[in-house]
Amino acid sequence: MMLRQAAKKALGLTSRQSTPWSVGISRSYHENVIDHYDNPRNVGSFDKNDPSIGTGLVGAPACGDVMKLQIKVDEKTGQIVDARFKTFGCGSAIASSSVATEWVKGKAMEEVLTIKNTEIAKHLSLPPVKLHCSMLAEDAIKAAVKDYKEKRLKTNGVGESSQA
Image (cartoon, rainbow, N blue to C red; front, side, top):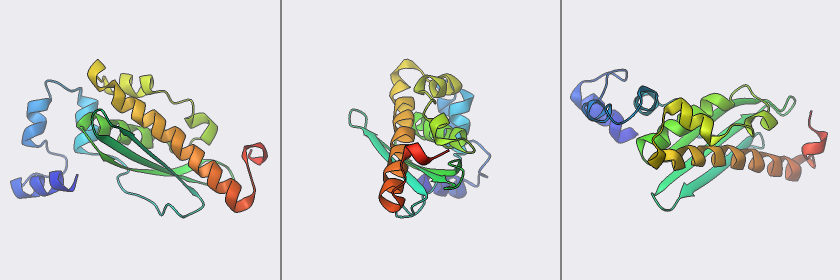
């Protein structure tokens, strides 16, 4: 992503303007993919040692995509108050990560576990060859929730049964 930003700066483009390569791929990808690729939401990371953070790290060896998705949870309410991602991969993987972070914010952990890759794929109009990207996003959400719950159990001795 930093390379893309440096290229935009070198070309004199603002963050909202399309890059030259976006114009070329716009015929192949839906506008939602291009939007989330050119303007990804919630890029970054939290301190993985923070007890209110759950981290999901997943990858697809076949294509080389690696996705880290983190959630920040309000420990009193169990609501996800923020989310961040870092993804190494194609535009569809970056877009899937960006959408996933947007969709989990403000929701309860149990609710985000119902987010399916098919919903992400439909929202982004992913072609069949790119469905694995939305699958990674779903897996990353599940892994982040699992990590948070395991961390909470270790830290506070509090598991699923005592959360509202």
